[in-house]
Length: 99
Image: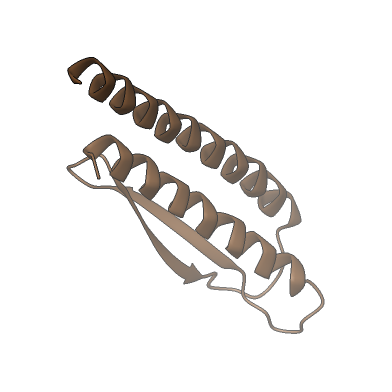
């Protein structure tokens, strides 16, 4: 796997983690004492993204935050997918030119 593919794949995984946390938060809106799941993203030296899942310090919902996070995660996933597809296409074109 190329570095470009690895970076875009890590971005898609980070977006998926955000979607999962958002889904868990929505599913538990009526659960007493539920502490929201939060995803913290950090960038590695290679450009890849790593995620850490944590819980909010206080119970309660933040529907607005979860809706925004869901939209951000969707767009992050689509952008990283476009990078992945473009990198794959460029690699294929390069191999075709070499052959």
